[in-house]
Length: 261
Image 1 (tube, rainbow, N blue to C red):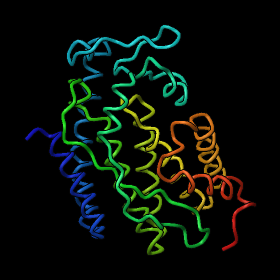
Image 2: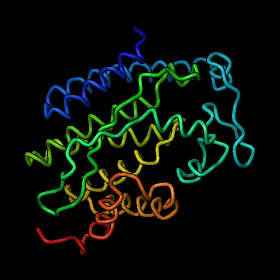
Image 3: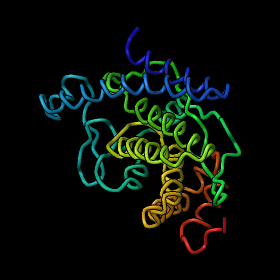
Image 4: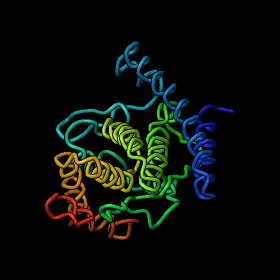
């Protein structure tokens, strides 16, 4: 079996364990998937250093996509400018690609009522189930940006859930690091429709920063979340968790407005 199929299988097995309430087996499955995605991402880094950008395109196929301002992208996605600019640029992804890629990630609720005991803040707790269908872009298929970001999010969600549910604060920095890795991977040019994942990442990172009393970082996350919800209201209006996001923005963006414990 190709390693990418193994990663998808392990990720989806972890989601099944989460649905069944077995967080330890879920953690093990996601960790095994993450080890494999890390291996593939390291291969990509080594190949990029060895071949350079042009060599990567020649080796794995695909012509550079011309982005706003005449710049090009090695993955078919605009990797320069702000995250909002890259997501809103029409050159980055066609509508047919966007529909196909949205269908390849399914959100599965594992705990629809997960909130902070101290602040009552909302935590996005939809695990990400991946499609088993192969993609047509050889470079994207080989190096699984999408799979890596989703696996990192799912493993972070396990640590986040355990930390909040059992009051184990030491697990929150682990969850935060994985959320940040997933977010960084998306920003670096993962070529798939990720707006709902980005919303969940911003919300959950902001919530953990708040729990750890890192108020400036928390405010920064919720400001970005508010900006994205405002600019892309039509696309995300019917998305999961939007009401929870808005509640967090209202009460957690400014620490002095947070509800009392």
